Image 1: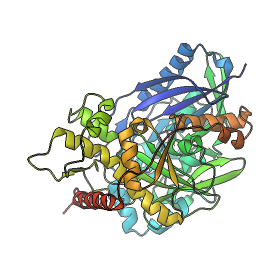
Image 2: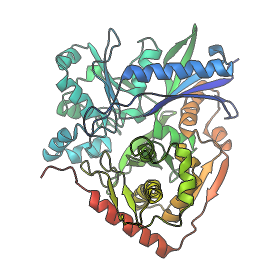
Image 3: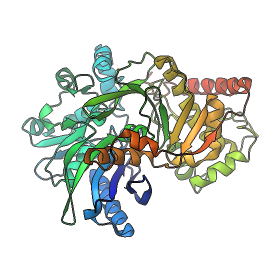
Image 4: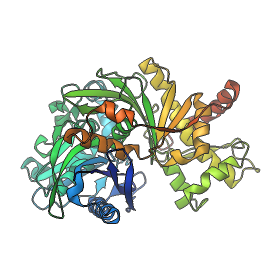
Length: 496
């Protein structure tokens, strides 16, 4: 009877539900976008109830449209936008404030103070992270500081705090479990990734009561039971979206890497059971907790990847649909000297410039709409290349190939340009839903749906490869132009 795994993939702009069978075949998928809120410049919020409603809706939709009953589900896996922070009332389940999204820069000042007070070395040593508004800890602090009475209520145990996986699990289990996994905890800037516990000094620095935080477990373990139409379905896999994608791309061996082209771009390299600290602005993070062992990864985060395409569509109205991008870009011989740096919410790795802002350079009287579109698309590949180069330095490993997934990986122009700029083979698997697949793998392993990672790895199949097609001198010239453009965007929003 237990023929399927249900993966819930809660992303930044939409919620998805995906059904997989034992052969790793995608049986059905449902997706629903939800509203984005931008109350001030650099601020990004979600209504947690929109997140929950959209996730519940697609979960019901995928079961209804596929004809699969809850009784046929072996388990549920959850993967989520990672650093987005939610605080809610324990008794009512009502959020006390909107979710502060990972892209939001409102806590930059708090981060500046932590850095000025000399806490950066301790934070990197314990959490593997750099101090940045990207991570959850300062978001929790901001909500507790700004919502009247929140801190007092938190200290009394009346409030719960968590990332989106915790919010969903708490609701799916009817408020029975307040949990998270190692990967999501490792993104809070509050979690000791070697001792695998909340760090008391960091909680004190950000004035966050530990009583409000979730219990932390292995990524593949029993988190609770979801109630679906009278059935009780175990939730046995949780991982942040990028770690889930690394697992879904079967990058199980040290040195294997993947890049996900989503709203942002996230490049992760498996570093094995050894924590590798970066000296180049990368993040050291937990890749997975499985079978009593923890695997680590180096990560580089690009804040604006596919979101630059949404910007072209929604704000500039230069395109009507992202599917137009490949044809427009392929129709030009080059970018006409135009570069777009989409630093709308600052720059991530390896720059970590909270004050960088979006820039278009190289415009001439002959520049066209198409040149700007192509430059925006190329910016995704350039940002990924910046991360790859420092990752290779820190790890001492040169990538023989890079596995890719995510919505924009369907774009052949982008992947060919990525291969050209990196000088490296790009491999796209047949299963593009790697994030959901990773959550399904983690859930399925815990309940014996799949026997082990060897069985899972044997099922991964390549779809297409892209190899470099330009000369090293062309590559160097293009990258020099990109570096000059990036410098123009740096610290634009810093106070004089």
